[in-house]
Length: 288
Image 1 (tube, rainbow, N blue to C red):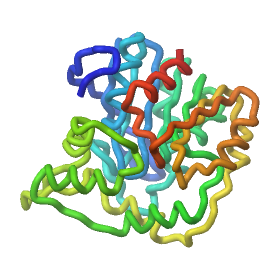
Image 2: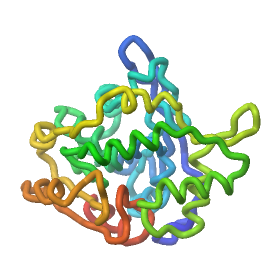
Image 3: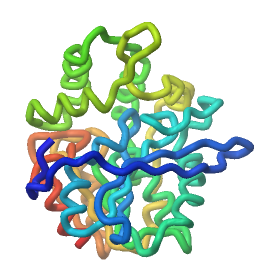
């Protein structure tokens, strides 16, 4: 996958950290780019995604001397699955990340897409571990029930595939709102979003139990404005112009806060993929 600034797409380094989750321990694993002594940026993905979604952004930030850490949240990618599906929720993730962030050199920045943005809001007001700056990619402190219902319907589906081409076709359909991506980006997504079962089939690279909290709860509006008001650092809010999760009214209310910048990208919904040069450039400039 070509870098926006011409950096060769070398394989990233990897890391892991064992986190406490209630009475359990689970390994958080990540890929990272850039110099080990660079100022860290933690990039956290959406509900069914993984840390490789940030490869293009990470290479751009690494070219500017940043150390970019892209975790797989528990139950996704290479991180451990949790023993109880009810543990797959933002408060659990935020508490687990606190131990990881306590060991991370300061200052650092946070980039969060959708669920990753909610985790960023949760840790953003915690003294001693809060990031210097936060990027919220198409998520905010009000989550409309209609968008959550769409997500719940998607999570209720079960898929397996015979070929990588079938995986790519599926991703192009369910993530069409990511916007107009080049063929190479969709193929990269298929390669990094699937795993092969012992039976030889391909499935999405996450624990099906991540759906448990979503499918087990009534679909209602979620109000997180008190969490938003607790943030003190500068925030970049990114919105896809056609997004159903971050609506125009919520984005405008967020932009009214001092030290908040709102950037809206056309021809995409939930959520901008942070792959093309305009999107990665907006993030890089805000964090520079």
